[in-house]
Image (cartoon, rainbow, N blue to C red; front, side, top):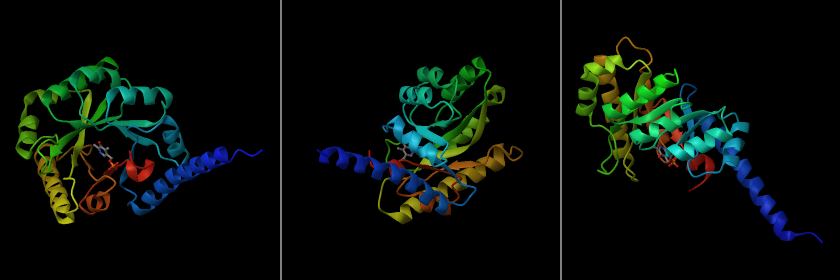
Length: 236
Ligand SMILES: *Cc1c(COP(=O)(O)O)cnc(C)c1O
């Protein structure tokens, strides 16, 4: 006797697997070739990440340190980015392998990333998180705070981190013009910071902005790195 329920479940699996691959291919086709796609796999199972790997996706992002550690253990050869709020006491768990920490919002965190990276004789790429959204609870540094942080002479002594650019999240809203103006503001801060502190440093070139609902606007406004979760793996 054929088990109808089993066939039905297999069909759903096939559909989802195909969707992850299709979603990645569709988004990639749409992105300019210079824009990196970071697949945000938070809350999603390792199987989904393996499916994304079959589509040639190599860069993944997570927003919780221990979830990132667990997934890295199972998929060590992917390139892992951290995109959540990072407590200084958790840096040690991800320092042995993380490629980029996109959400640096204090000197204290940057110094701890440097200290841990040094232990493993690594250089960890970092982005400074900028607060551009209207929601107060979103994290990140204001424009003037970024300047103050980069003016600290101690920054020059951090040899095991590399500052590669800025990261931000826009306001969660349907108002496309507000989102666009926030991404413009971000690009403007990036330009000022680049001129003032990194004019001769080609590593400082990244602008990580744009998620499933706003990545097209972000790319139009200068994003070099989009972070897409639900648009690849489905809703959480
Ligand atoms: C979850 C998350 C994303 C992806 O969000 P989607 O809307 O699912 O694409 C991007 N960036 C950060 C920092 C996130 O936490």
